[in-house]
Length: 140
Image (cartoon, rainbow, N blue to C red; front, side, top):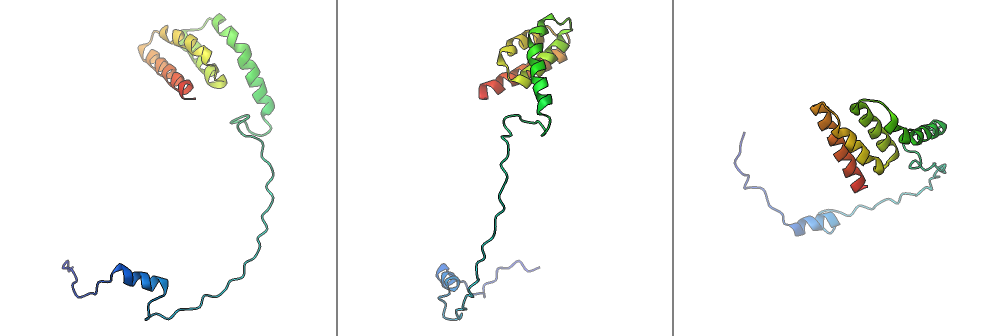
């Protein structure tokens, strides 16, 4: 392989290149540009779509189930304190309610429940989940 620079090729400057590209170069004959007929394209009418933000993640036809879920979550909120469960399970329920309803008032209760978890690994995970929820609400 030859890695020596080629010195015998002519170097063109930007003006020569601009002339060639614009067709002003005397060496290149100007070619006529054929006129292309334009056709009107029929654009199909798009049917209106329901607002997906109204019920995110709900498949069409499952709105009734989503309503039942929301009702059950609202009914569950006041009962969480009455549940006789280990702190780990109680925390999981609170976190589910927080994430399903965006109820930031439950974050303090979830934090208190997280501090009651005995297993340090599980407690650390719960505290990290609390931090993530606080960040979510702070940046919402």
